[in-house]
Structure formats: structure tokens, C-alpha cells
Length: 441
Image 1 (cartoon, rainbow, N blue to C red):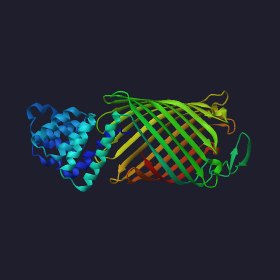
Image 2 (tube, one colour):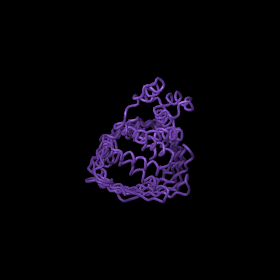
Image 3 (cartoon, helix red, strand yellow):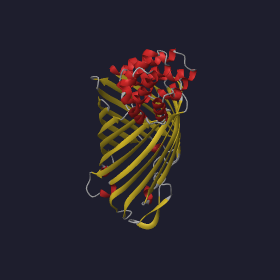
Image 4 (cartoon, rainbow, N blue to C red):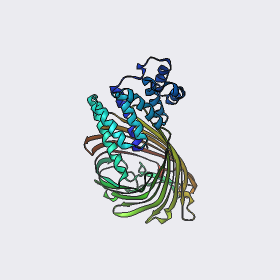
């Protein structure tokens, strides 16, 4: 959700540990502004302080609060001017130097921001804050390298347990009214299969700047999953993408072409080729909105009757709180239309919502989670079930990422899925528990 520069703005929360609270100044206007900032009302604080700048510029307490308020509303240049006045009077003002580093970072002056972060660290801060600063300084250095072509990647291994490897119904028989009123017994391969599994994956991404505001992107990733007992459901997949990202002030536009392939038991099952466009707008240092539109041509190698055009469009919002917690939500519409004639009953219109978030438990552990819901209404009567199919699909994801060494992470997680349907063959639940170890480079 948030890009790298926005994520780094969360340093302010860490710096609060080593600096005086906002209520340290005794002045009616600055007291009111400090109270507004402490309450998370940056816009109101800025509206109160900004008209007095010509009269009160040079007053350290006023300038400091104005700088904070300007950062909160995205007036980063004004924040730099105000905080520079503070540092001109008090060069050892640790909090002001940390905040001006945030402002420089938001303005894209990454080298200057890194130097200011390093200066804060040298001024003697508690050990836990120093560790946090180390992480942001390293991230700033990585951002500096974005002006040059860059390639990064990962390798990953996963061990897990899946209660529904083949996404089948959790029952042994179903009634298919269009065929018979007698329950039909499902084969072993048709109903849900439980199994342990292992997976290996890897990926690589490249970014090539064309100018200050334009960069070319490309990436490739793949994974192979092996099941312990039901090897007929072993799955492999790979995805490739290429595109361009354009930054214009607070706007970020991305256009990507994509191709993916899925194989089952070493035989190609499905391919998907398409394009995705996204517009992202950074409202301020802590809030971001985006909109997206995606098209895919789905091709089923054996069951070509299922070939379809798939469209997904929606919008998302993300917010970062002062303590670095990030929350996000999205809504979307989806449409899948079969390309063959006479099979409208396998096409559908749908809508969904997703909510999620992440929070740093400490300097090495991040908690994350998400909820999802999707409704699908199929376009015609299914001749086997003599009804128009409708689905309600619910999802829950919970996990944590632990950075146990440089560039190494361990991620345990649990994923729960339940699909409620008015056609028994398509009703199922699935639970997956896994642990992944990843090395990034």
C-alpha cells in the first residue's frame, strides 16, 4: 500500500521516545495547537498556526509546532522552512532534526534525509530508538539507489498443512437435480483432500529509471508445490510482468502487462494474460487512496469451454497511525464472461471488500492480518442444478513476519476460507497453516 518513502515517515513515533512532549510550551495558541496535534488533528492545528507565521516566525516553540502541522497536511516545503528556523536557534533540538528528516524524505531529498537521521543517531538516543534509526537509514540508502538501475529478488521455502488441497466440497455425496434425485457419490479426487505440503519459490524484480519521475519495471516469479500423499494435485505456477511507473507530485501512475501460468501434476492447466492500471494519490504523510482496473484473458488448456474474459476494478484507502500501524481497505467489482456460446451459466458478476493491516510488535517482528468477502451471481441457470448459482466467499488471514537475521525472515500464518453456495458441489471450506522462510537479495 504505502510506498517506501511514506512507510519511513513512521519514524516520528520512535523519535517521541527520546524527545520532550508537545505540551512543553506555555502559550495559549501553541498549547491549543499541541493539543490538536496530540489528538491527531493536524489540519486543525495547521489552520490555527499558519496565519500567524509572519508575526511569530523565529519563535522556536511556534516554528516547531508549525513544522509538525505542515508535515501532517503534506505541506512538506513549509515544514522544512519552519524546522530550519528551529535548528538555526537550537542546533541540538533532536526532535526537530528527526522531523525535518521526515520532511526531506517526503520531498524526495533522500540523501539529505539520511544525513539528518544519522545526525539524530549521533546525538545520543536510547538503544531501541538507535536500532530503529538503523533500519530507516538502511532503507534510505536503498531508496538512494533508485536513481540507478536496480535488481532484487528472493528465494523462499514453505512447509504447511492444507485441509482442502484441491478446493473440493467437504462431503462425500451431492444431489445434482438436473441428473438425478439420488445423491451422487463423489470420487476421492472430487471431494476435499487433506495433506501436508512443501513449496519452493523464487522471484526477481528490476527497476530502470528513465528520468526523475519515470521508471521501467519488470519481474518474474515462480513456485512449485509438492503434496505428501496426493501428488496428483501438485501445483506449479509462474508469473511475469513488465510496465512503467510515472510519478507526478502526489500522483503515482502504474501500467503493467502480465502473464501467468498454472500447472497441475506437471500438466499445464490455465494461463492468464492481461494488463493492470493503477492510480495512487498520497493525500498526506499518513493517508493514501488508489484506484485500479485489471483485465485478464483466461485460457484453460484442456477445458477450453471455460475460457473467459475477466475484469476487476475498484478503489482502496490506506492510513498510517502515529505508532506506525498501517490499515487498509478496498472495494471492487468483478466480471467473468465466458468466450464460448451457450455456457453463460459459468460466467458471473460480483463484488467484494477487503480489510487488513500490519503493526510492528518490535524492531524485528511484524504482525499482519486481513478479512475478505466476495459475492458472485452467475449469469444463467446451471443445467445440472436447475438454478442460477450464487456464492458468498469469506476469508481470514493472520500471521507474523520475524526478521531473524539480515535479509532473512520467518513467516508463520494461517488462512481460512469458506465458500457458501446454493449448489452443493461448489460449497466448501479450507484451512491452511504454513511456515515460510525467505532470503532476500
